[in-house]
Amino acid sequence: MMTWLQRFGAWPKEVVVLACILFVMLVGLVDYLTGYETFFFTFYLLAVFLGTWRVSPIFGALMSALSVTAWISANIEAGAHYSSYFIPVWNAGIMFAIYLIIVFLLTRLKRVNERLEERVRLRTAALTREMQERKQLQKELLENSEREQRRIGRDLHDGLCQHLTGTALAGHLLQLKLAAHAAEAGEAERLVKLLEEGIELTRQLSYRLDPVAVVGGNLTDHFADLAADTGRRFKVACHFASSLREPLEDTATAAHLYRIAQDAVANAVNRVGVTHINLGLASVAAETVLTVMDDGGESPETVRGDAEARRRAMAYRAELIGARLRWERVATNGTRLTCTVPGNETKHADQD
Image 1 (tube, rainbow, N blue to C red):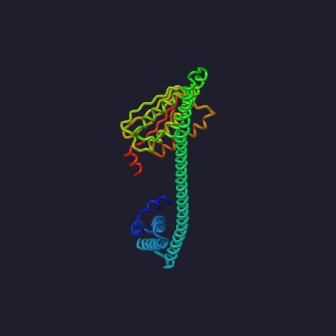
Image 2 (image 1 turned 90 degrees about the vertical axis):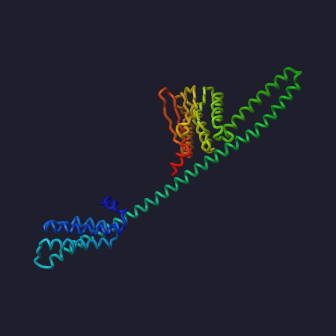
Image 3 (image 1 turned 45 degrees about the horizontal axis):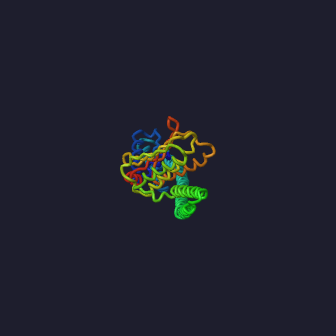
């Protein structure tokens, strides 16, 4: 019955009023045609239910009175005979009282239902607000972490690198001055080489922390550098291939895509037995697809927590740019990550 009443809940009240009146008249006509032996109590009750639920309790009482009148009139017109006028009046009163009880109970049920719906609405609104606040907090934490990484990267590049470069130059001058002394000159040369290696390592670290404005125009260059740096540092074969038809114009999307690739590569190099890592950027229809595939096994227990943290970070970055992220094990033993970024038209359609 509740489902039936809710289906009529969207009807305008004027339409419901007219429908209830016509329905009672129709049931009264059928009641008259079928004779007074047939009892139509339930059919009259449908109009009482609908009028009470959709219009008001007062209208439900009016429909009760109209239903009782139609029922008594139909029975009398159909040939029902009573020994006294008290009998039809008594029957009508009993039937009207039953209808009023039903109207009262239905009104209470409607109020309880409305309170429950209001409570659900408030809790849903509170939950939605909490989810939005949590999402905003996560976004701010991610942005703060990103800014801090970039600040440290710039400090390393502009501060420590410059200091080490100056020290290397001083060591080189010392080497020239000690050229006549072979032993001391060799020690100075080794010192200069160590400083130059320190400069290169610091530059690589600063680049990983702050990839110097990753934008669509040079995104493929940054991916190529990431593949080359991964191969040098971890002694694995890391290759990058790109078939992008046009660069990504959205700087934020390009930066998040690069960070996703960084985390995916960091997880890949920690897997057992990994020897090859393939990075790929491709244009598929109106979408940009990033793939990171390796041939390693499961991550060791010691790094599994860090790997899960990176996966959550990748999933959140993908959500920020509206991308679809998927991990899967390949048949030849390995893991493939696919990140699909919709084009501008697809993004606008999703937002609409």
